[in-house]
Amino acid sequence: MENLSNKIRVYLGREPDFKKEILLRNTGSEDFIFHWGATDKVKPTDDQLNALASDATKLKNNKTIAGKRRQAYGDWNDQLDEIYKDIDAWKARIKSIKDANPKE
Image 1 (tube, helix red, strand yellow):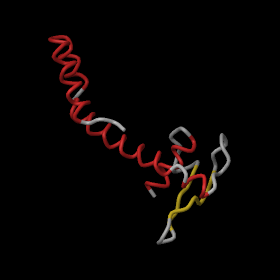
Image 2 (image 1 turned 180 degrees about the horizontal axis):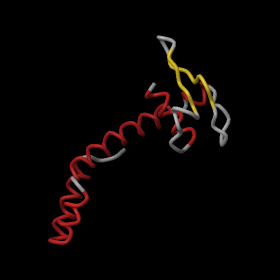
Image 3 (image 1 turned 90 degrees about the vertical axis):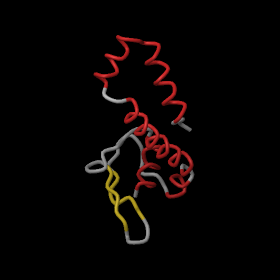
């Protein structure tokens, strides 16, 4: 369902509430939209969603990369201390993390 949910995120251009607004189900072989409660856009067709597959994959990959970056950045309190002590060293460390984990 992750792929379908990412297609829906791309289609809507925002993060929907998948517990109340849009409900997904699986028949055992495929995922489908069980309930569409979004009021800002009509329910998409399968063709519309399938056309967003590459963007959905990009979104998934960028979320994974963002998680890796967050972990590597460390606690924001520590970052503030690091900035206070040597902002240039902090900038270099952050740049190396971003370079090692590029977004698509």
